[in-house]
Length: 303
View (cartoon, rainbow, N blue to C red):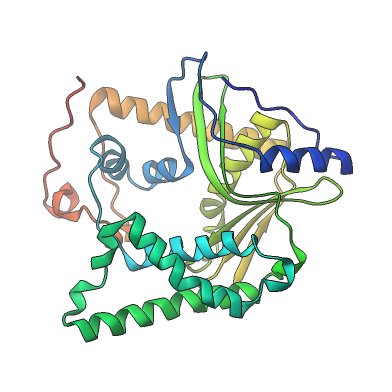
């Protein structure tokens, strides 16, 4: 496995070295280590939500229709990533507005199926109107961002960075972090943008799992304990912050390993049980879900 230098980011010098290591980081091949499998926070979240959903997405790899919400998230993330390519003084709401349509064009070029995202609106005029309202919703999310942070005062160490680490149990953890900030004193902050609304009281832990997962990966791969985890909710303009410690990340590692053991049991037995919840309303697979009278397809052959 390609080694990643461990950098003590507790001093100004360490902070600069850590930031430089992030800026030059590239996806690494896991060689020399016989990993048992890999897990990302999104797939781990799928299994916690519904093991059958995990199966549909990861084992069966069933296609899912594009959604305006998911496309909005992609466009907004892309604009926020590109915003920091600009000189600090040009990172304004007005400039972000001008970046929305080019980002939407790039997304449609990368994923041609999105050209039909609003086709169900009917005639071309209705499609154009719905598309315009959707683009406006993207701009509104971005304008809300500027009420929460001042990007002219930020210089992220990394954006949309791929991170990975192999645990002692030979499970590969991987994912893409929206943003990593490193303060002059070495403090590391992991930032994630959400275009939806912040979670209700009592659901913050589930929302923070993704960032704890990323913090665990950085800690295990680079020896750096992030000081702050920050979720920016652009749906209602709120920020959720959390300061992790080693106990949190050790507990997260145990949770991830327990999830992996449960996934292996489901793989070995073929028992991918559905878990009915309010989230079923947004599931693309209700027609083949036993909870709704459907029948899942046969499991793919192991060959």
